[in-house]
Each structure stands twice: as C-alpha cells, then as structure tokens.
Image 1 (tube, rainbow, N blue to C red):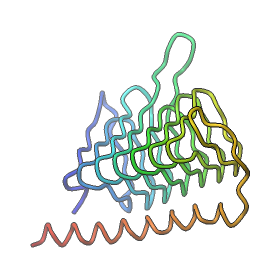
Image 2: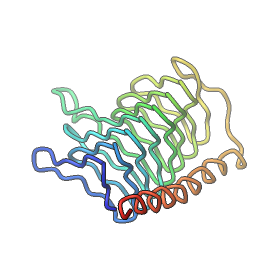
Image 3: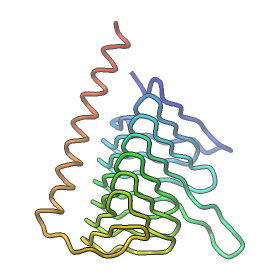
Length: 187
C-alpha cells in the first residue's frame, strides 16, 4: 500500500514530497507545496493544503485525525506565512495550524488553533482547545491554555519527555496501521 485512499494532488506545478517512510492514512488530503519527513504520520481525514505557501512536516511528527493545516499567502505588506512543523512534534486531533511555526518537540492539543505568524517554541505546549492569536510566541517549554491562550507554567524535563513518548508511540502506531491496511489490500 502506498498512500492508498489518500488524496495527494499537485497544485500549480507544486507536487507534495512525501518521504518513503511517512504514513499517510486513507482519507487524508495533501495538496500542493507540502513536504513530509521521515517517519512522520498524517492521520485519517487531515487536510494539508499548501496552495498559496509551503507546508513542512518534520521527522517523526504526527498530525492526528481531522486536523487542518494551511498557510497565509503573500500580501502587499508581507511575504505570507508558511507552516513549518519541526521534528518530533505532536498535533492533536481536530487542531487547526495556520501559517505558523512549531519548533522541535512542540505540542498542539486537541481542538487547539494556532494562527498566522505564531511560534510555538521547542518543547512548548498549546493546550487542548486553546486559541493562539496571530503573532503570539510561546517560549520553549512553556504551557499556554485558554481562548485567547495565556501562559500557565513552565514544563519540567519529565513533562517534555512525555512529548517524546507520544512521538515514539505514533511512529510505532503508524507502522501497525500501515501493516493492517496492507493486509486489507492483499485480501
């Protein structure tokens, strides 16, 4: 199985670039200028639309079910905002990540929204359901929650390590889903 059931489309000459070890679940939609790194996983019914700027998903990062990732295109006052997701990031179910940067080991909780020109620092967390308004920056290892999101506290090493645990879990889970789907297509 090679991304069977997923929609992977070029847009205006830009073709998605997906590492051979990445898992793309059936129902996912990947369009245009999108790069997906080694052992990354894009889960069921996610949309990554790189039509007016680029999207990058780093190694071992996971984008969980129903998440939407988009970008902000150029305007007269700006070059626009790509969406850059570093290595070992976790993006929870039904999140919206729009024109922002997630540094390595960043975490976006279920149903959270990160808007244009935001930055979520290394090992930082945007809590479930939170709204990070345009241009805000969460420094490394901080947790922000609420609508609008505000500082809650700094994570310790053990809490940051939990993000790594989730990343490793999803790399393994993606392998199991790929094997199950491969088995179905051979039956």
